[in-house]
Length: 565
Image (tube, rainbow, N blue to C red):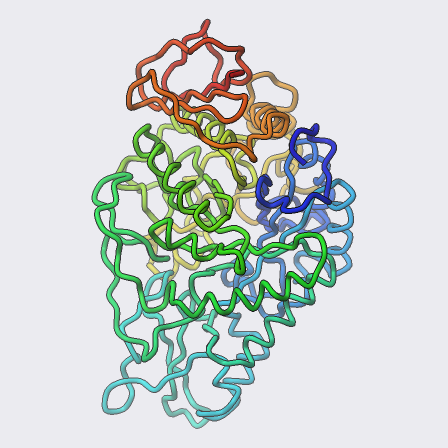
């Protein structure tokens, strides 16, 4: 795959995932074919040639399953069908066939920690008596207190509020409590139950039989809970999905105590079992873990040879823009993942975090926030944010391993901050009474054509979240072929990455500059990223790429250059 032009994708090489550039598609917001304001599978299919032209190797589709959409599809009511708002199974087959014809692999999102409360399995559990086999598929418990009036423990939901909801029995009396680490409409499965494990082996085979090239596994560090479900109070500084205690940007003082609902050792038995299923199929089908755990050596446990193929490098995503912190996380990543024979992955944005064109210019107190909005203190400077984002992407795509891109980042899209309160849909917004803005700002539908209705997102002016006026200047057709545009920067970086086989290379750190400069060689390419404010003179070598236009060979702050070694 490496060394070829981006229009000559090849689906056959072994271990393609070690160097792949994987593009995340959030189906609601990518492209709308039928004009109802909601993105769909047919819309994705129609835009695949643009992704082929961009030069990516695979797409990862966020959930498109049957769902009440309380959490944008991460509340699944049928794991083996397509929600009508996105189309049909036939539409999925067409999408996949078209992608494969273009040499693009298709990775399906899998949500195994919890289902929708509308799933027939949970509805059967509600209809069944306490202690039944049906209730044992989920985590039901008696409450504390004289009459069971208090939750079984003190766990909090990731989305805010209590992680337990009490049932009302058919006769009107209070019943058991059920666990939902996310929304009340997302009850957690009991993965200690062999029946649950068997059902998900069937789900894997359903999509593998249809030709899916693998799965991104949602909340891959969840599923198993500590025996006895002990009380736990997370640290104030810790992330809601698990992680480290941070005392200043990029400096981790101590590793947070592992929550009893995250990163329990039993999850690895599940993934070893799943790996056996995937290995039955030809074509290097893969598993990619969304595992919010620390340190990086712990993340690497998810990608040991008999488990998953990739794990998202959230430590890299969360690292602020600065030379010392970036060098440290790159070194730590390469060390941790190579120790288990896995490639490091690199990622800067996704559907759950503030887009890096805004996040990299946020003030320190908002680096680990829960979305940003009009009342957020220290809002980002849009010019600084975009310049840093371009420089950060140019740095990331020069690193060995596999990279993930989030839809729209190739256009330089910022976080949409000024969404009307009435338009917001993220359950975090509602469960915290508006104290946390949530993730809607990174999920606004994409602009494709500057003069078209909904900026080309669909054939009408409708879009499920309102698009800002500046989307017109950032639309794909406004950037296509324009020298210096963010789109053309991404195209060039991806082409050079392939031509110089950077995904297969190694980082050889180079001296000669101070702390703000990230300076290394990867094969035949020298990378110089200036994270500071003072300009520097570039070393000798033919310029291959710069994230900003240069005056001569002076590299200004917040700019990255690639040179021929």
